[in-house]
Image (cartoon, rainbow, N blue to C red):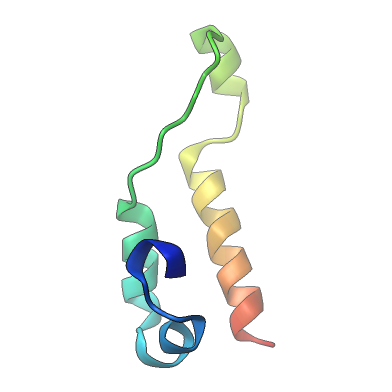
Length: 65
């Protein structure tokens, strides 16, 4: 997040509200390389929601330190 916005970690943790960070993460563009896998193989991999929950969990753990 800091590299994408140019904000410092301190600024993000102290001046940006949590809901804004979550919205920024969910709106962030991403490229998922399937590497030529079939649709069936893609369905068995992590979903976008799982990926987002993992990121949210990271930020929650960093905020409680």
